[in-house]
Length: 204
Image 1 (cartoon, rainbow, N blue to C red):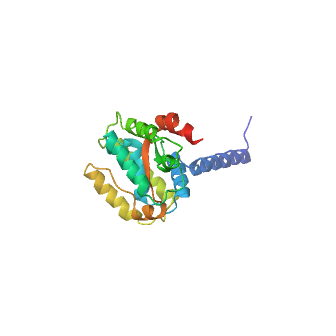
Image 2 (spheres, one colour):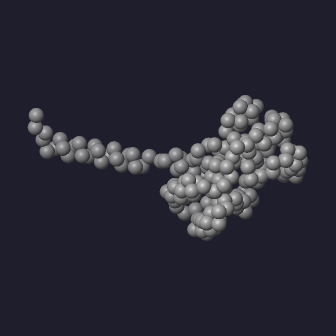
Image 3 (cartoon, helix red, strand yellow):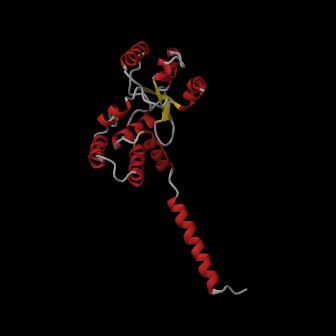
């Protein structure tokens, strides 16, 4: 059966539309960034980066002494004038770890011991050395951020700061002053399986 010219044009038009739709479909990184910026519209590149390295390295770079951890959490809760709105949020696009708000302890929903147990266990078995896959993934995350928020404040400056840090074999940064001023973050990082088993059921 001969295929007519106009039928070929229709097929090519369909393929073109299909490819266009596929190219416009947001990537998992873009989906996460869009969701994150909806919750935290004043966030900067370094705030997204902070969550990105937390999602890979967890809380392993923090305190490892249980008594010291408990004392510091008590102090942070007692000295905090306010807590940000969200109980928890994935650290990064892969969702390996969660930032869990200390207000879940302050308001009595999660006992301190249960929270500290999950937090301490989250640091077990993590390789804290900077790896090339992380550096490569961060490059893809930055590309996704440019697509989602092309006019993000201080993007170039923060990008250079982070690039220099990674070049030195380091990766830890603090939240931006802008983020701290707007959202008053008080949280600890808990691994996804521990969060879902030990913490999340108490928040429902």
